[in-house]
Length: 256
Image 1: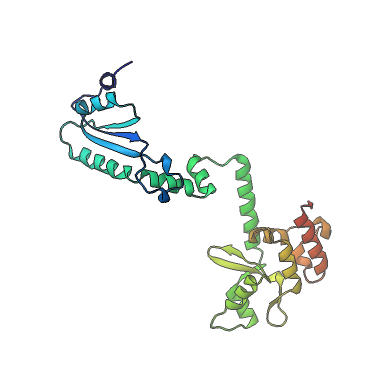
Image 2: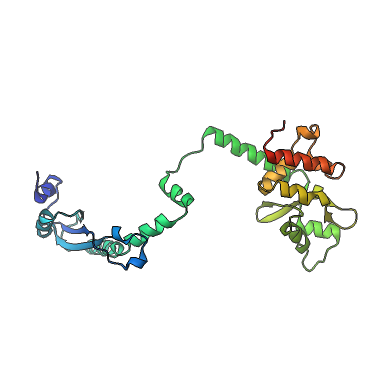
């Protein structure tokens, strides 16, 4: 078996090169309360010097070692900076690992997974979603809170307050678009001022598992239970049928 010195030579590492090595031991250097599993945290025995001086310690050690070798000859200033940075990092590596392991599952998956291009199916789904959003935004079915406030003659001091209260209490929903909430006009009674249709709260409770854009897609899509009518078009004339269609949707029954 080759000695450390021979391995250095085999790797074309000149003994005159500056080196720094980390030798790991099982000694914990933090209080046990600082870590969930302190026994796995190691003390790093950091040694810095010339490769020819450090090689004997490596050969006589039975512990694991990590060696950094600078290929700059002499007392290089950049090597000093790099080695000093590595020494400082070694003091915090266990803490950083613990923090990483304590992150959310989603964050861990993102960290471990490489950046991958979308599959053709996902690209098709994204295009369909964007097209559906475009259709909703161009339909004249949605308006900003300020527009509703103007139609209903709400207070000009804070015109968005009333629509926002409706949304918070589950009387209506709104789709977010470029930092602005857009509210469905079909969900409002606009004869005297403006107020949400009574059936909306019940329908939204049934569709609670959908996000706001999904709700908008459902209201604006033909529904076989409603004889290929859109739920949004029957909210005033047949509210109970719309509610029943929502219950069927929530139960997972497909409609054509």
